[in-house]
Image 1 (cartoon, helix red, strand yellow):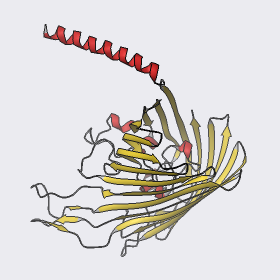
Image 2 (image 1 turned 90 degrees about the vertical axis):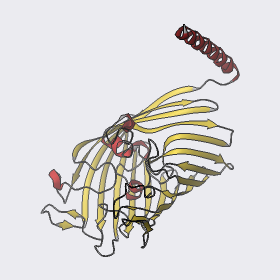
Image 3 (image 1 turned 45 degrees about the vertical axis):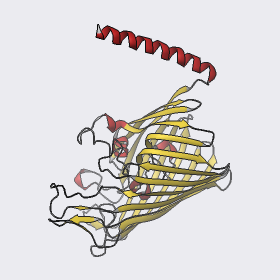
Length: 392
């Protein structure tokens, strides 16, 4: 009898909800559901370094760094857009997708659970014409480049993009201050911790934007503790440490020089304080300088015709006080190092949906980082890549 009552109640509520929803749709615009996405694959080879086995060489920037014929990712995006509310489910599959969501396998205990395919998953509410609230997992607002290869001119990515945030989970508010100025404020989990908050600390984000018909400029900030704080609860081990708070400021701008020429700039500075350590009896603040990285990249692109474009990216990226390991060659005493990377790419449009990208890239380090074909230490790496990116 109890189950029958619950069933009748559920049916009654469902009927009321359907009737209410039908009434609402007569007063409010009906939303639309769209599907979009991309598929990409590539071939990559080195000119002056091994191309196979455990000695295979590649820049330590993200994506486009596998040998021979390689897979990128399949990307499927479902978007529901209503007058006031909407939602996005952005799914990724393949090596590039796995690299993009590397921080996701938390809920599955480090195994590749279903969250491993979620690049973005969020809902939004247009509170007014000037204010939009977004809750969920969304790609970062920092940087010039993005995860999807359809929105980048170069196929391989910069060092700044690779070691800035990829994604955030939290809540953000976008404010359209005027026709040209915008502002974003966000409270988020630690960077790239997308499934849930394991550390109990939060990161603040902000962005000031300026846009015109010729281009746009964005000044971005993030600040917060990325790996949590130590608590003397009996589980700590001697010399266990935690980093301090991270601060990053990032400037991105891009504008049309003419109908055929485009220029872009990205510069960033990231620093993390030294944090704290468990001595065996108590928790003490660590002395020492902050560590991090900074960089500058310029982008220049020409489009002689509708179906062909050519562009170059020049980037200088520097690590200080061992702010990153395994990315550039570091001085063993100071922990400093840097790299200049030049990337020349072509964009050949085929049939409207397909873009072919031949690409030459040279990475030159201050310190030895790569090995040459004789397996001797080397400061430089020259490589060629050919990618095919299909968007729908």
